[in-house]
Image 1 (cartoon, rainbow, N blue to C red):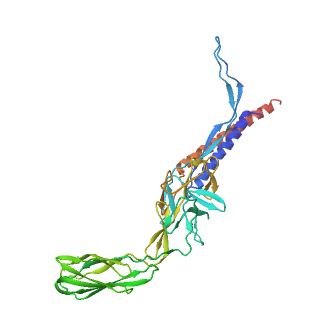
Image 2 (cartoon, rainbow, N blue to C red):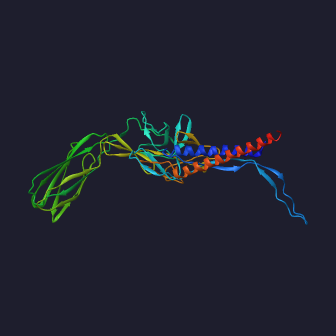
Length: 391
């Protein structure tokens, strides 16, 4: 049978593969984190009609005479170029700017993905769009230790920001050096270590010649008393003191000008316990929780995986990849460490498919297919002529 017939068949198969790959790229033009692929061809074995001849003193050497036997697919390579950033406004949507993959697990199978469209499931676990559990390092007491193996990230049951006992209160403003305003009482809420709320009260009473006496306490013991002096706009005397339950009151920010009474307890550093209101992602992959008491506490940090040969990863569907013998083992790290990229919160990575290039590839594959089909048609005509020689 004619060699050209089989060469044409091999060309049809190769060009069909190119059509399949190109079509898949176009179909995934809007797939989050998708990386396009391209086909590389190589020739197959060639039939040697005559071998190369050794040059002789009276005769030149001859080159080998070979007939090619067709084409085949050498490789289907993945384009790992970064896709464009698409802002979503969702604080759980996460994009990797640079190298690396998110690590997810379904059952006992570990997978890797560039799709950072995450959400919380009904059990408080961070999950990918296909239901994979996102792995990382969870915080213990607000501290994240990335030294161990990562595990699926989940919100602590009944997440609560612990209460913080008040240790300091700051008084600012102005005490009227003339004392014309009379007695002034200032109050602010303070908190015990268990979150119990109390009221810290400071009473300022004017005296003679710019003197002001104060009495401070929160009802836990005897009030602390003392005197400060207003002179030339400054307040002198003991401006720091500690109440019976350990709250340091700082009055060094007071001034003592005439005809102005604005003294107040500006701040205190305690908080009540708080419930979790929302979560957000940082550029280092740290997932933080915002609580009703105003506290922001780290909850977990995402794990990223890098590979020596990321092109060796196998596509496993659902925008996930799997480790292979030629990808190398994953190196687990955090964003910005080693060769891993950084995290962009509130954004997703678009597909890196170039439609203009893909449509050009469609034309090339189509014409290649037509040309190889013409080879088969021509070979068939030659065979028909051979059959008709007998007639």
